[in-house]
Length: 299
Image (cartoon, rainbow, N blue to C red):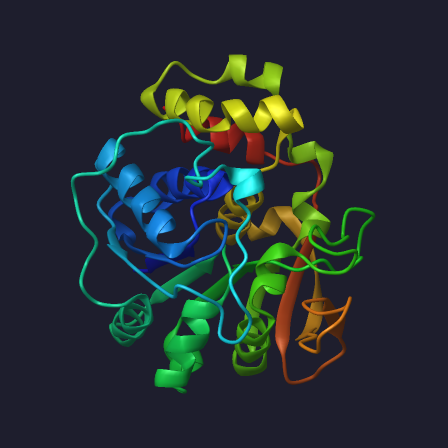
C-alpha cells in the first residue's frame, strides 16, 4: 500500500490540488508540508490548515522552509492575493500544525516505506531533507514535481522570465540538488499545464456541482478570475498525472536547472542520459479526462 505526502505552497491552484489529492488518496494522504512560495510560509501553513479544517481532511500539516536556500524570498501574492487564497476573507483556522519540521517529516515518513511524494511548490523542503538524509532518494518510492518549462510544446515558456517557471525560479539551487540526487522523477511542466485544453473559464464554474468544495473554490477564485478570466490548475494537473500517467505522453532524460545569476536563472533543460530517468509529461494522450475527474472530486 502506498502513502502520500504533498509538499506545497497553497496557493489557489494548490488548494485545488489538495482537494483532488484527498479525493484520490483518502486516508493514505498522510501529510501536507508547506513552503514559502506563492506567499510566505506562515500564510501557506494557515491555508493548509484552512483546507484541513474546512473539509475535515485527515492529513497532518507540517510547516516548512520560510525562504529559499540562497536567494531572498519573493512571493506571488500579486497573482494569488495577499493571503494566498484570493483574498476571499476566509476565517483563520482554529487547529494548529504539527511541531516537527517539514524536512524532518519527509524523512520520517520516507523511512516508514512506500511513500509517494508530490511537490507542487519550490523544492526547498525536499532539498533540506536531502541535506539531512542523503539516502532519501532510495527511501522514497515515487516523486512527482510540478515545475519547469522545457519548450517541448508551444506552451513550454517561462512564467517569471522568458525561460523560467516560478517554482524552479524561486529556488533553483534546491531544484538543482533534487534533480541531481533523484534518479527517477516525474515532472509536470508548463508545457503541459498551460495547454488551454485544461483551463476553466468563468462560465465553466456554473457547471461545478452544488457542494461546499465548489463554493470554496468559487470564493478563492473570484478575484483571480476577475483579473485573468481563466483558471489554470497547474498543481491539480500534477496530482492527476501522478495518478493517471498512462493518459499522458512523456520524454525522458536528465533535468538540469541553471543556477547562475542572469536571465536564464531557474531555466530547465532536458538532456540525454543513461543514468537518469526524469520523465517530462508534456502532452495528453487521446483526449484528457482531467476536467471530469476534477469536477468529480468536488462532490
